[in-house]
Image (tube, rainbow over all chains, first blue to last red; front, side, top):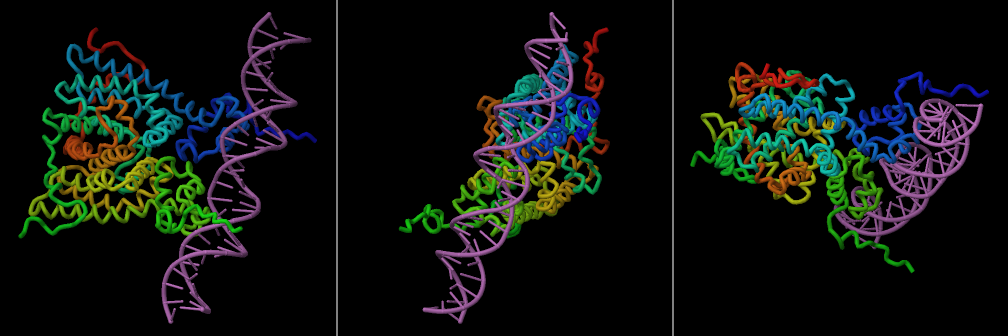
Length: 250
Length: 250
DNA sequence: GCAAGTATTCAACGATCGTTGAGTATTAGT
DNA sequence: ACTAATACTCAACGATCGTTGAATACTTGC
C-alpha cells in the first residue's frame, strides 16, 4: 500500500524549519509546566516533528531549555541597554528621574509581553518561573541578565547619590519580584479583585510599577536607613507567636 | 539466616511516624525541584520509608503535594489573622499605619522563615515557586491564602480611604511579588551585590519591605491616578523598538 | 493474650522517560 | 549529475515513572 503517512509536515504546515518549531513549542510548554513537567515527546508532538530532532539540534533536553531562554534574551538585552542609555543622554546635562530609569528597565519587557505575540508572553512566564526557582534561577538569570542589571544599578546610584548601595540592591530585589509576578499572569489578582484588575493588563502595570518602585526606593534610601519613614515599633511590641490581649488597657 | 535488613528505620532513626517523614522530605525536595522534578521514590528514599507509603497515606503524589502546602498554611493563617486584628485593635480609636498593616502581613512569614527551622524555609521557597506558576498558583494559592488576603485588602482600604480599590489590588500584587522573590532565596542578589546583600538575611527584608511597599501604595493611590507622582512622559517619547537620536537637540 | 485496626513492606504492573545509531530524504556546491 | 553536508525519520534501548494488591509487622482496646 504505502499510504502517505505524512501528517502534512514539512513545507505544507508551518513552513518553519524544525529547529524553530521546537523552540516555539518548548517555550510554550516549559512556561506552563516547568522543565520537568514537559517531556521531549510533549514538545515534539506539539511541534509536529520527530522526537529525535531535539537531540539532533540541541544535544539534550537541558540544552534546549537553555536555548529557549537565550533566544529572546539576546533580542531584549541590547534593546533595554539602548533604552537606558537613551534616557540618560536625554537628561543631560542632568540625571534622569528615578521613574525614567526604572521605566527603561521595565518598559521593553512589558511592551513585548503585551503586544509581542504569544511567544513573548510564554517567554516572560517562563522567566517568572525560572527567577523564583532555586534550581534554575542562579544559573540562567545570572548568566543572561546580570550584566544589564549592573548597568541599571549604576544608573540608580546616579539618581540616588546619597543612598547606601545596600539599599539600592534591596530596592532592585523588590522591583524584580514585583515585575516577575506580573509576568507570571496567573490570574490570581483577577479572582481576588472580582474582575476589577486583570493579570494580563500590562498597560496598567506599566503605569503603576515605576512610580510604585521609585517611591519605594526613596523610602528606604534615607541616609539614616530605612526606618526613616517606617514605623515597625508597634509591631515589635506584639509577640510573634503568643497573642496578648490589647496592650492599651490595663 | 534472616539477616536484619533494617536500615535503622522505625524507632531507631527519627522516631517520627512515616507520614511526617514523608511530608518533611517532600517539602524539602519539592521546594528545590518543583512538583515534576521530584519522584515519589526520591521522596521515600530521603524519608527512609517504603515507596508505597505515599499512596497509602496520601492517595497520590498530587495529594501529597497539596498536603505539604496545607500543613503549614493552617498554622500560618490564624496567626497572621490574629496579628492583623491585634494591630487594628491597638490603633483604636484610630486606624493603623500603612506600614503596620503591611508588616502584620509580612512579619509572621519572614519571622518563620528566618528562625522557624529548615522546614519553614523550604515551605516558603515552595510557595515562591507555586505563586509564580500558572499551573499551580491559581489553584493552591487562591485556595489557601485568598481569605486572608481579603482581610488585608479591607485593612488597606481603611488606611487609604481615598484610594481607588483598583490601586490597592495592584499595590498588593507588587507587594506579594516582592515578598515572593524574597522567599525564593536564590542567592542572585548575593552575587549581584558582591556579597553586600544576602538572600537569606530576612531581617533586612523585614526592615525594608514595609516602608518600601507603603511608599509605593501612597504613590499610586493618588485620587487622580498613579501619574500623580510618576513621570512616564519622557519614556513615551522614545520609541520602543527604533532608537532615535537625542530628542533634545535639533 | 487475642482480635481489630493501622502502619509498613515487598514485588511487580504498564507507561513513559531521555537518548541513540542507523538509515532516508532534502539541500547546496561545483 | 555527482558529492557532501545538512535535516529528518524510524525503531528501539535501558531506566525510571506513579501506582497497586497482597502479605507482614506493629499498635491498641479489651
